[in-house]
Image 1: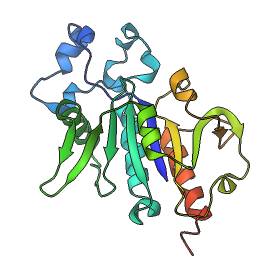
Image 2 (image 1 turned 120 degrees about the horizontal axis):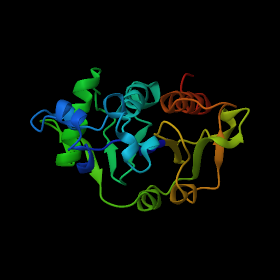
Image 3 (image 1 turned 30 degrees about the vertical axis):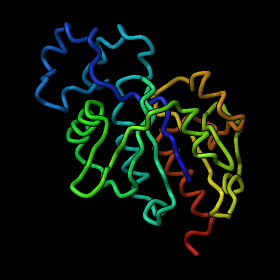
Image 4 (image 1 turned 45 degrees about the vertical axis):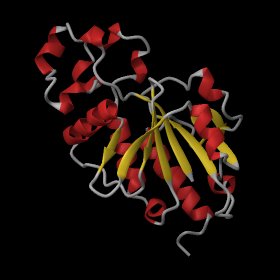
Length: 223
């Protein structure tokens, strides 16, 4: 299974917010965690930004990675994760990445990633930038099935039946990495399979956790 967390609010603090008092109080160009736009800190001035409802949410990505990388599916080497940002940057996550539990340290990691475009250990690349569009990436992956998960999609009563037990078939799932709103039109055009797992909105990391579990059951991972 390949999961893309799409339109995530990962970005450095925009130049237009740097003159603001709250930014001058919190922003330190020598301290990575302070460089990230975080709604928990900057919400009083984020209404100055276009599309503010999808921006400044690194916590969504943090929870998504903690849950997904810790799943049995990932431990078995059957999961690949990508992070797509609202600014159309795409990052491939090494399944062996051990994500930082501390949120401030995680924000520092993300700031470093956005500046340097990759994160490396002494032995391997842990996060790398994909240079291409989301459409390019999906063509390259060439999945057998593509699903967009949204509360506005068709309610699926038995999600396990969505997946084949044939491990040679790639299944691609796109999950919104934003607090509220809907996928943009470009992303909606990538698949006709717009599905919903529950009749109410769920947090992105909950959706990811559930879809991973359904896939694990479909391929009989626990047998």
